[in-house]
Every structure is written in structure tokens, then in C-alpha cells.
Length: 123
Image (cartoon, rainbow, N blue to C red; front, side):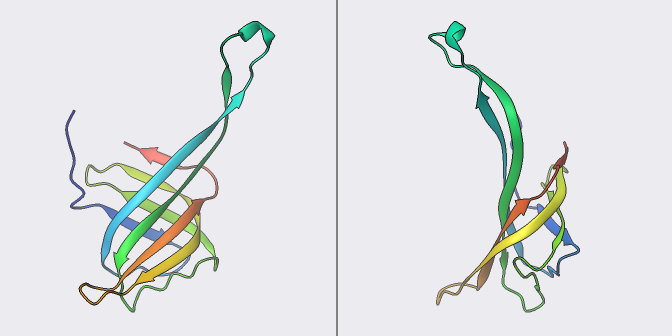
């Protein structure tokens, strides 16, 4: 299996504000529910069937006065790109923003998002 570095990853948002520069990292959590279908005939094992899917994540950037995303202000579309060219695109709500200021580093921001519909994955 080949390994990939994160040197050229990217995050782009559309329809909900501006990200100007300083992108550093992103995470994506993709989940699917497992609905229990166990009945007496399945003993002693539990059985499951797929349920609803969901996705959420975060992205981190170096703080810049041009970055103008506001949590809860509007829905938009996010595109997450890995340096391999893999992309993850879907409708999101920005659900949170944290700003970090330290004496020994640059100011950073972390945004959290919640997917709201299908996530299109292109590998």
C-alpha cells in the first residue's frame, strides 16, 4: 500500500463565506448506523442491517482577516481534496469555530461542519 503525505491537501467552501489562505489540515468522519435485527433464531449472535449514513468533520487554518465564515449563518458546499486527488464534496452547515492564540505561535482557527445530505466521494 502506498502512503500519501498531506502536503497539498485543500478545503474549499461555496455559498457561505470566504476562506482566503492558511489551510493546514482537515478531517472527515463518515458513519453508517448498524440497526440491530437479532431475533431468537440468531442466537447466540447479534445480526445487523445498514441504517442511515452521516458525515462531519473539521478543518484548521492559520487565522487571516479575510476568512469570513460564520457558524450557522448559511448552508453551502464543501470540497475536501487530498494530495492524491481524491475529493469529497457535499452540502454542509458550519457548526462551530474556535480561535487559538499562543505566545509562541501563529493564531489558528478550527471550524467544525456537519454534512447535510449525500457525500460524493471521488477516488
